[in-house]
Image 1 (cartoon, rainbow, N blue to C red):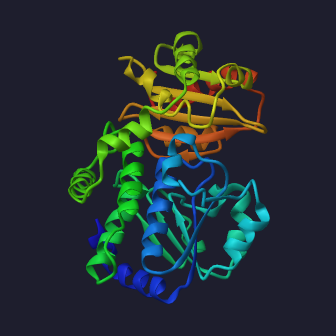
Image 2: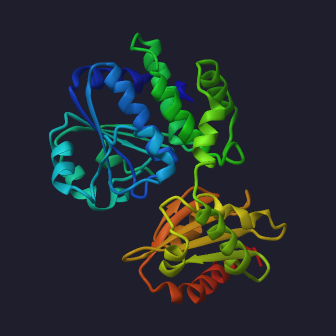
Length: 342
């Protein structure tokens, strides 16, 4: 994998060596891969004596809080002034798990304006090549954390410091969450990374306990409600669930509480596509998952103002959540006809 980037590793080493202040950013609604890759990169740069800061567009799920025990991550939607200052004062901006500045939402303008050198490290398709000085992009890896691991490993081979323990743990976290704990998007390189990090001292049992066993009772009951009463199936093949504000309040919902629930309907033999629609303040967030041979990236791009990977994509709808079922049913049927799924 990194063999394809061998010429770029030298350029990355030169940029890092010449930079003093680094700002690391990721996509809006940051998940485990976004947070893990950012923290992994920050800790690596700090080990080199660099001033490295993370600015995320908005809040990440509470269960990832162990990656930011000191509360150092700056949230742009909570303090735009500080976020702008962090970006504009940097020598280098590193964009992780994000193929375009447009996916950083309200941060897009200041990121484009920044005079810093700009580096992209990402595993999504169709990177915005015009916006970056150096690009590491590959979608035949499990996660951005996996891609970052092999890039940093190559830097270590060039005489840079070895991986700090927190970098190893953060990268293992993002790889774990983006593969749904090795259930999908897992390659030989993914298992090799996992084996090497375990040998280096990552405590996988403790990490899994933090990721999957620290939720509230309300979260489990909410998932039960979604699966029992909320799951609807269209034409026997396409599942969807709605998570409106009222249901969120009823169960004390926190961001990340329904992480992974969109995958559950795919356990049904005939279900090909699963969708979860979560009501936010100004839009409805869309999560799409599919069986291996069904491309929901195309579905997300055409009907849900989004995109992502073949079997895991997302998007947004500017509509009332009450109108989503009709919209979804019409969209999925049109898509199913195009994709010959009906």
